[in-house]
Length: 210
Image (cartoon, rainbow, N blue to C red):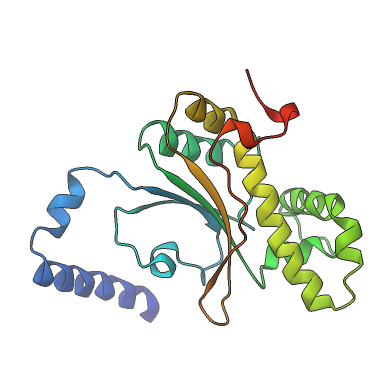
C-alpha cells in the first residue's frame, strides 16, 4: 500500500481518539440519527470542504457535490439528495456554493474537448449563453471568469426554486430558504450573492407549478 493510503488510515484513528477524548459520547450521538439544518450543493473540487468553510460539525450539513455545483433537472443523483434533504431531513436552508477558479466553469469558457465530461460542461455553457451580453462586455479575462462563476451559482439557485420538490415544500408551508454563495480559495471567505428564495411567490409565473 502507498504511504498516503497508510497515512489516511492513521489519520482516522487519530481523529477518533481526539473526538472521544474531548467528548466520549460523540459517535454514540451521531449514530442515533441526523437532523441537519442545511443542504450544501457544492463543487467536487477538493479545496472546497463544506464543514470546514462553514465551521460546522458532523451531522450539521447534508452535502451533495458535483463538477461546478450544478442543479441539473435530469440528474437523479442530485434530485434524490434534494428530495431526501427537504422531505425527510426537513432542512431549512439550501446553499449552492461555487468557487472562484472553478475548473468546470473555466472549461465551459473554451472549446476544448475533454471527453465524457463535455456533456456536463454543456449545461454550464448554457449559463454563458443566457448572460453572453454581460460576460462578453467584460474585457478583463479573470474578471469575466469570476463573474461567470457568480452567474452560474445564480442560475443554479433559480433552478432549485423551479423544482417540484422545493415548490411542494413551500406549498405545504415548510420553512425552506435557498441561497447562493461563492467561495474564494485565495482567502477562505464566502461571498453571499444575495440571491435568495423562500416561497413560490418569488418565482416568475411561468415556473410556478400547480
